[in-house]
Length: 185
Image: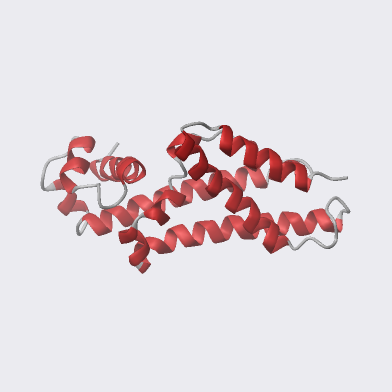
C-alpha cells in the first residue's frame, strides 16, 4: 500500500473512532507508520487528507448499499437485505457519525460527501419503494421519499440507540419494527 493510501486508511479509521477534532496529524502519522513530512508531501494538510478519507468512506458505503439494494429479489426483499446486512452496530456508521462532528458539519466541503452519499442511498430506496408500489407489493398511498427517509432514520437512529445502550438489540428492534410495517400484506 502506498504512503498516500496508508495515510487515507489511517485517517478513515481515526475519523470513525475519534471524529475530526480527535484526529491529530500525529495520530494519523503514527497509525500509518509514515514520516512526519509525508502527510504534507501528499496532502495540503489535515482538512485535505480528511476530505480524501471521507470521500473514500462515503464511496465504499454507497457502493455497498448499491450492491445490496440493486441485488436480486422483490422490492421488499431488497430493502430487507439492506436493513439486515452485516454491520458493526456498536461502532456506528462511519459516514453517519461524521454528522455529529461540529467541524465536519461546519465545513461545506467535508460535509458534501456525507450528504451526497445519504441522498444517493435515499433516492435508491425511494425508487425501490415506487417499484414495489407499481408491482402491488406496497400500498399505493406510500410515499417513496418518506419511506426512504424512514429507512435511513431507522438505520442511523438504530446506531445511536445501540451505542447508547451498549447493545445491538436496540438497532435490531428498530429494524424488525420497520420491516413489520413494510411487510407485504
